[in-house]
Amino acid sequence: MLQSLAGSSCVRLVEQHRSAWCFALLVLGYLLYLVFGAVVFSSVELPYEDLLRQELGKLKQRFLEEHACLSEQQLEQFLLRVLEASNYGVSVLSNASGNWNWDFTSSLFFASTVLSTTGYGHTVPLSDGGKAFCIIYSVIGIPFTLLFLTAVVQRIIVYVSRRPVLYFHIRWGFSKQIVAIIHAIVLGFITVSCFFLIPAAIFSVLEDDWNFLESFYFCFISLSTIGLGDYVPGEGYNQKFRELYKIGITCYLLLGLIAMLVVLETFCELHELKKFRKLFYVKKDKEEDQVNIMEHDQLSFSSISDQAASMKDDQKANEPFVTSQSPTSNDSSLNN
Image (cartoon, rainbow, N blue to C red; front, side, top):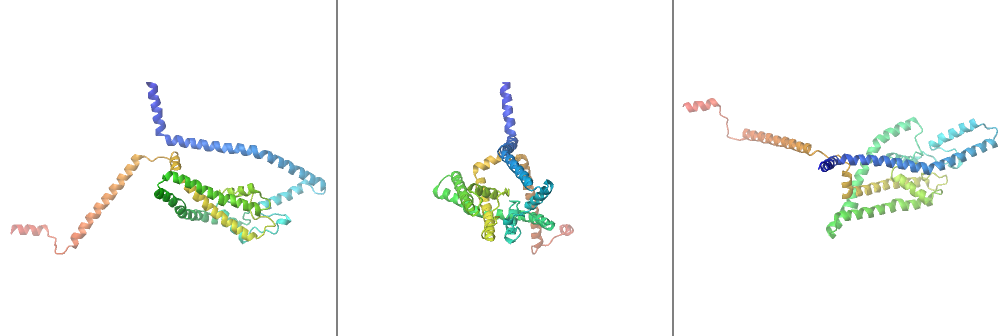
């Protein structure tokens, strides 16, 4: 009997703090996922980094042997300066000297990556004024972009998601949840095809050094706003119609970001995902809600009664042929 009582008390304790236990499991799962990613990336990429370091060391040593007049310190100073310039998007290679990083189209592309928080990092402000303006521009522009995207997605999702689901639900009598799930899957497939697969095939043709996997990788990194910057289109020295190409990429990133938000919002409105998210939210106290409701009702009732009393007084004051009699006049009339 004691065991049954202890078991029932444990069950009640778990049920009372269910949200806290789910949140603790969520935090633990997220930390484990971070560790899992670190282990996989380290095991996969570390051998390639070691191989690249060995190749660079051999190449450096061979260069110093062929050019005995050049010391290792001088070579390292030159390479350090070259790498610093490369971090700012400036290359010393002759085949890349014709591409400017801060013409209008490149600046437009940079502004779009800043406001969308993609931030490839291949081009950064050089001057102090540019860095200061970038801070102010981002502080104002990023919330403005979020407001713009929210307004656009809120209007698009009505015609793309909600109305089609209601149409099949009302017209054909299908279950609303099943229709919503099928619609979300179909919309996700269309979005992946139009903004990942087809653009990846186009980028693999337009970019000489990209294969399909690298192009698809760029599309995903860009539209997910990760923006690692290892692949940036339109940076080749022999890129044809570079200005028009940059404008097209800017439009693609903006439309793709809107499409991604529409798909995410569509999936978030699914009933199953809403129930799953509620497992990790803090539940409101019912007593506090009732107290707030009662206080609100009392305030509203008292304000209504006060307004009614004041309206009655105003009506009496404005009524014609009504004169107020003083108590003295009433007493005199009674005496007479």
